[in-house]
Image 1 (cartoon, rainbow, N blue to C red):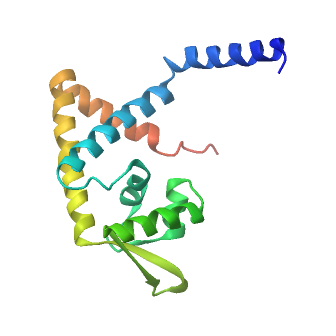
Image 2 (cartoon, rainbow, N blue to C red; image 1 turned 45 degrees about the horizontal axis):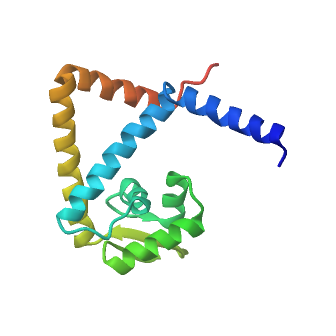
Image 3 (tube, one colour; image 1 turned 30 degrees about the vertical axis):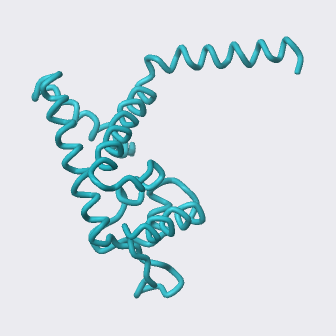
Amino acid sequence: MSRGLRSLFDDALLQFAAGARDDLGFLLLAAADTVVTATLAEVAAQGHPQIRRVHVPVFMHLEPAGATISTLADRAGVTRQAMTGVVRELEGLGYVSATPDPTDRRARRVTLTALGAEYCGAATLVSERMTAQWAERLGGDAIDRLRDQLRSLAAPAPTEG
């Protein structure tokens, strides 16, 4: 690679990194990463060391009646093949069950097992504890405003017209 092209790439990366320091999207991702990392560490210490970051979207997007692998993949923004691998791994670990969907025999419906419910309960308690710590740092009103603002940003934008 030529020195000029390398310099162009280096400049682009430096500019990208500089912009990322104050970019709202990157800051939101960094905050989410902090939560996920801390949650996984705490629930690992509580008896769930097999759960990894790649597993989290399955738990996030499951509904009480379960969800198909295709639905989980769509919600997580990954391919059906990728989600199938993650679900198989969680099934092998005993956290979910995947059975033929009663409405579509070609599909598999994923549901929590007792172990999966135990993990979700532990993760919820960790999240609640972290939120309480943030409320101590920032104030309860600030946390309530932040939560409302994030909900607003996460909602689809109204369409004109």
